Length: 359
Image (cartoon, rainbow, N blue to C red; front, side, top):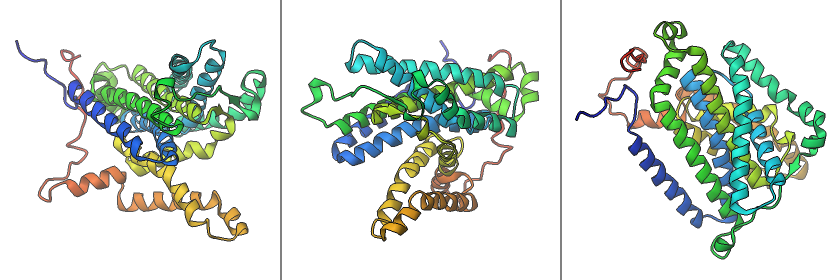
């Protein structure tokens, strides 16, 4: 009996799952070598990775630009917080149910935005998603009885389970939970992008008219891609709420939403590994800048706080785009490529649209 033939671009599922399990195990074991603050930073990187991975697949694979993923993270965070406070039980079961609720709410919001995204493109779609982030504080104030306005929603304290309390600290437990959730999100997006649906996304991105003529429902592909990316961002917001024990609109501003896009571009657009590198840069760079300005006078440190980080991010983005247009991941891949290996051009990487028999 012959094996089923894989389409170009498809990856073996077993290999993907084994790689995901291996890297997840390495990350979990690595938490034992980190101090509490480093584990807290690792948890932040994992939470941001959920959003940036979904964003890089959305922009890089389907060609849809979103500037509102911070709002989708906030939706997931509010869904997690409200569900967690409403449940009569606690422990791991409450976390899992609240996490699924956050994913479900973000999926519904992403589906609604995706329906609009199927009819918009380019700056119109970017403007729509940006408007969602701008309207977030107003929505929180309007529904203040539920969302508590600018104060946000506090969640019940989620400590380390009793069976592990003597072995690991709180920050390590939060980092381990964040790593597991990020691993599930990244694995799901990798499988999605490497399968038939990933080929359809690339076909719609490269030439929507040709994709429609080939029988690919371009509108449905765009909606599903936006929904999957929204679920990933919502799970990141839920994990962030789990770590901070609170969610508020002030944490998900326009600046933060643009910072997610910067992380994707710096890491490498379309690359999930690049999204991980960009998430690490977003978390660690402000901390490094704070360490460098700690010895300055108080007035100078207050003036530079926040502003210097924005300036450095801007300079870093310009530098990366000038020296490595494919991002950090593209630069690392180019250094590993043999000298005599030909460079793959757009003509070589053209997406093959599945035939009727393959569909």
